Image (cartoon, rainbow, N blue to C red; front, side):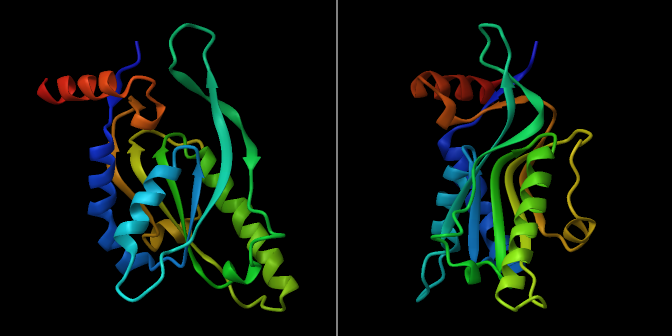
Length: 204
């Protein structure tokens, strides 16, 4: 049976708060890209902590990637799939492409499980920005991608991130956990029951 860990909104808020200074000092993001649906809430919380005095909020864009597949049982636990499905992507017809070229871009997701989704996101976004830079005649400028996740599962990964990214410390997990099933509050149908289970876990 899969071990479940219940995470509350309060805990998510505090994980983002605890990570904000490092993100600001080390990454200095100009733009956030949230991977839906788990990256939306952390990205929005982070934005409040990343705002500097007398500066605008960091813009948030969204992409949708799906890797998990629901098991054919009554248990809502999902199992990682083998293929990434792109359900939503950046709309380059409305997004100012120059906002990506040569900028620091923070990719936000809730959990790094198999790393397959993060690998896909980085590869595809790098490819899109490279194409945009060529069109703009700015081929010498590269976007600098960074990653923030709430939880990293301490397990062998199927996906791989660029070696340069890892060596430069452009990957940050607020917390590392064992290979458990993390139940996030935005997935809950009954939030009171979710919080009760989270509280009972903390007492054990």
